[in-house]
Image (tube, rainbow, N blue to C red; front, side, top):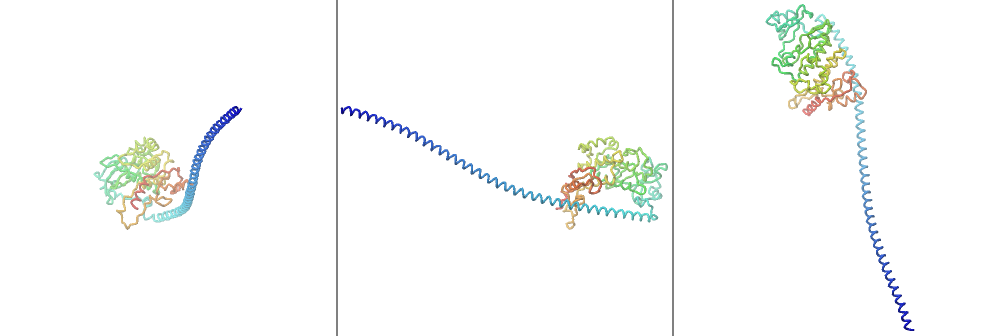
Amino acid sequence: MEAANAKREAFEELLRRQKAEKNAIEVSRRAKVLEKLYCDELRQRKELQEALAKEKESFETFKNQQTEERSASSNCRTILEGQIATTNHTTQELQDKIAFTEELLEVCKKEQEELQVCLENALKVNEELLTSQGGEASTSQRQQGLLEFSFSEIQEATNNFDPSSKLEEAEYGSIYRGVLRHTPVTIKMLHPDSYLGPSQYHPEHLPNGSLEDRLRSENNFAPLSWQNRLRISTEICSALIFLHSCNPDRIVHGDLKPKNILLDANLVSKLKDLRIQDQNPSRTSSENGNNSSGEFSVESDVYSLGIILLQLLTGRSAPDLAAELHDVLYALYDGNINDMLDETAGDWPFLETTQLARLALSCCEMDRNNQPDLIAEVWTVLESIRACCEVPTTSPSQSDPNETTETPSYLICPIYQEIMEDPHVAADGFTYEASAIRGWLNGGHDTSPMTNLQLPNGRLIPNRTLRTAIQEWLQNHQ
C-alpha cells in the first residue's frame, strides 16, 4: 500500500517536474522574444533619434538660408531704392537742362529776329548811301566789287596786243600775257563779232596751272591732296555765290570746268573765262562739257559745280562722269563710294566723302527745282565738311604759355555751346552734340536749329572725323 502511494507520489512529482520544466522552457522562450522585442525597440528608437537629428539639422540649414535670403533681399531693395533715387535725380537734371535749352533757343530765335531786322535796316541804309554816292563811282563797280580798267591800260599791259605776247587763239577771242598794275595777268580780247561783245577779261597769270592739269597730273604737276580738293570746292562755291549775287545784273559763268579754274602759288583757285553779265540766259552753248543742258544760267553753273565736285572726288573727266552718274549713285547707296575715289588724293574720310558725293549728285539734278540752293545748302554743307576736316596742328609746347587758348568754333555744339563729346551730323549739314539735336527733334521741331529751314529728314550720322579731332585737341590742351 505504501509502495503504491510512494509510486503515485513519485509519478505526480514527475508530472509536476515536467510541467515546471515545460513552464521554464516557455518562460525562457518568452524572455528571448521579449529580449528581441526590446532590441528591436532600441534599434528603432536609435534610428528615430538619428532621423530626428537629421531633420533638426536640415531645419537649421533651411532656417539659416531663409535668414540669408531675407538679408540679401533687404540689401537688394536698399540698392534698388538708391538706384531709383539716383535715376529720378538724373531725370530731373535732364528735364531742367532741356527746359533751359528750350528757353535758350527761344532767346536765340528772338535775337536772330532782332539781328535780321538790324541787318535789313543796315542793308537799306547801305543801299541809300550807295544810291546817294552814285556820282562818285559807277554803280556796277560798287555793287559787284569788280575792278574796271581803261582800254589804254590794257593796251599798255599787252604792249598794244603784241603778237609775241599772245598765248593762244580761242573761239571767242585772243588770249595775251601781260602786266597790269604790277600784277602778271592773262587778258582775253574778244572778237568784235562775238555775241559776248568786245569785252576784255583778265585774271591773274597763275603759276600752278589749272585744276584740269592737277587732276590729270599733266605738265609734271603733283596730284592734289583730298584736303586741298575740299578747300578748292568751298572756294569755287564761294566764287559762284559772289557772281550770282552781283547787282543789278548777276553774272553767270556759263563755262565752269577744271580747265577754267586756275591755281596760284598757294593752290588757291581763281575762275577764268566768265561770260560776264548774262543778258540772255536762254542762250545755249555746245562747248561746255560740264553743262548738260547747254544753257547759260545759275542752274547750269550749279550743275557744272556738281560735275566738278565729282571730278575732285574721282579724278575722272566730265564726259565720263556725266555718263556714269548712276554708277556713282549706286556706289553711294551701297556704301562702296571708296571704289570710285581718286587714290592719288590720299585716304579720304568716309563720312565727309559720302556727304560731298551726295551733295555733288544733288547739284547734278536735271530738274532745276530739285537743285540745292548755293548759299542755304551747298555752301553750308561744304563749309561744314571743310571745318570738320580741319585738325589743329599747334601743340601746347609750340604755343605761347601766357596766351589764352580759345576753343575752335567747329568743336562747339551750336545748341549747348559746349565742346562736343558725341558729334552727329544732321540733315542740314551742321554738326551737333547727339543728345542736343535728339532733344531738339524729340521736342517736335522739324526745322534746322541753325537755318530754321525745313529738315528733309531726321537722320543723324556720327561724325567720327570731328570726334577724333576733338579728342586730339583736348589731349593737346589739357
